Amino acid sequence: MANVLVADDDADIRDLVTFKLTQSGHEVVAVEDGPSALAAARESAVNLVLLDIRMPGMSGLDVCRELRAEPATSGLPIILLTARSQEGDVERGFAAGADDYIIKPFSPRELASRVQAVLGRAGQ
Image (cartoon, rainbow, N blue to C red; front, side, top):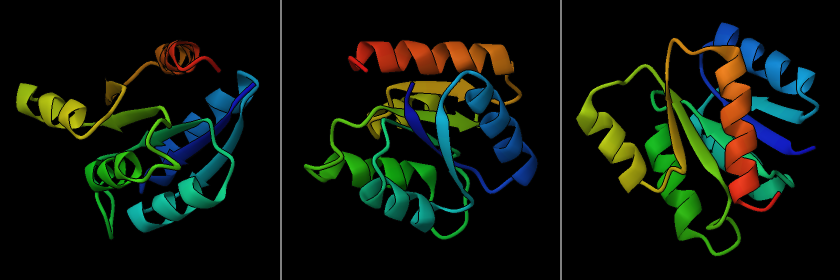
């Protein structure tokens, strides 16, 4: 399966996502803020990044933009996982380079399905 980076400042969400993805057979690296997410994406062999938008230090949108701007990570699949549900928020997420956008609260089963779908589209 895939190596997935999960970045969310809410420990409960991070633990739930980690549990569900691990249960689905993925390896998970979990971090709690934007700078740690950017560092982990650069340094770890991850196949997909799951980012909360509101995180300390650096937003998930900024992390997404940074990853898209760097040749080594520009093709890395990115899913935004956030409570921001307005149409403008979703548009900003896709404009930043996200491959998918999941709104909290979410179904863990749907999360696992979307991760598989994004990985499949990325050929992984």
